[in-house]
Length: 261
Length: 261
Image (cartoon, rainbow over all chains, first blue to last red; front, side):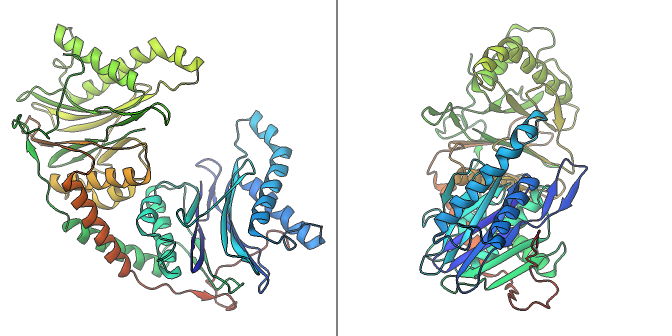
């Protein structure tokens, strides 16, 4: 499995990905899932990948090959992020058409998905999720993050922290790391190293990036700080008002009705 | 969907459940999913249900009917929690055998699962998860909580807080509520009221129970306290050490290698 996320705020973009890949529990490996297809000064394109690794590799290879060969309509010629998301969708369809039927015969999923975020000169920064079917969805002011892969464990912290208007890029990056760390702690199919990139709006180049290996001191400090604070927060929670089980006339106790008498 | 969880520590048991049920987004309703089948002084049996509501209702109805009719081997005659888990599995198989084929024709899942926790006089408290296939799993000192339904959103907080030896029943109850609250915030298929019961080891009766409706003042205070603390915790996180994108000789920066040159 995989967990990647992209966050867009009015300050720019954060893209982050784990690196675990597995074909069954007996073949666990690492693979890079965050890629930079930018032309600094002209366009920034950051891509995260999830799903069948042979499919996502092929899609990226074809996109790079078109660019290198100067094929008409290659990624460097597209003038909006919308067109780039569309282009990823089209390449995904092309690759899946070649392989899907053969994989289905053996009940292997060919499914894959992408996060595509960035900015083209003269346009606003945008963030898209491209589905395995080739259609795509844009992050909005009200849904300022997108996730692919093993998304559920790390969603509550994003729901509580990320806000398009207020969240700084540094805060978004820390929140992305916590979201990844929570997922790694709860699900072994997501694992280090974590790759992350920060793009500050209107700079037209990827500003910062980092790679955190297993046991990275920052990751350990982040986790320790968070867990210590969570335990303190936990101690500060208001006390529960239990209802005694024999206190039958309380109208908000737990009514253990029989569904058949 | 549904989210139920059970926590066992050396102090006893917490069982909690949401109450949302839906058959498609246009038929959303509430249903009780926490049930008490105890005989105080003799045995405590608490049950949470998830999955196809018509199946879980039938299983509970048959178990109650057997008990009422004094059928040999009914739930009151079983002498261990292991036997009770086995009994739930057998009833589940019986009900699914009656209905599964008909549901499959229309691609409707008959799948259902149970958490069964409690204690029988002279035995230790135990907590089981009964799968739709009728097999069952026991919570252990190292895996002191079990979840059914929409389990992923609420798992990270349990992973960080619950410990068999140290966690008090009050703390386990608060943690269960946070886990439910995080899930309700991130997934609309899980919703109030929340039912929760606390069983203190060796008392042989359900000690306390509570029901929290949407907008319950305690739930709001709990959520507010938690969110305020999380934001403070977030501010205390150590600062990130970004690597400048041009700082190519740093050996731990994000290496954006091309998979094909």
